[in-house]
Length: 108
Image 1 (cartoon, one colour):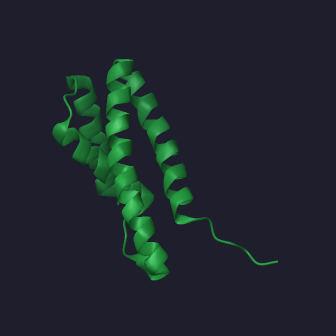
Image 2: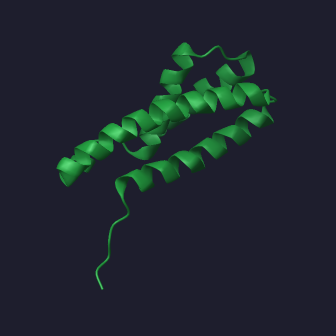
Image 3: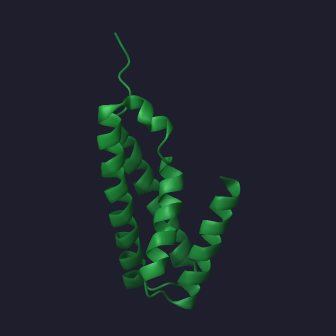
């Protein structure tokens, strides 16, 4: 019986779900309105999934490409940073998102 690696898309989408849920909880703890949270998470997901599609296509051509693409966490953090540039966020959300991105960028 041979082991089949998890598809790249599954790896990225599962990570998106976990990271989005964690971010949602943190935003809720800061009393960010549910509508604003949904809008922000939708924007992050859209950016993330668009990049994930590119990564999957690249990896279908060459599995070694996986070594050159961003990890799911790095892609999530980059998607937050990108979404913040165009989103109209409350001060509480903006502060948390900036700290979130800065903390992960320092760690990575």
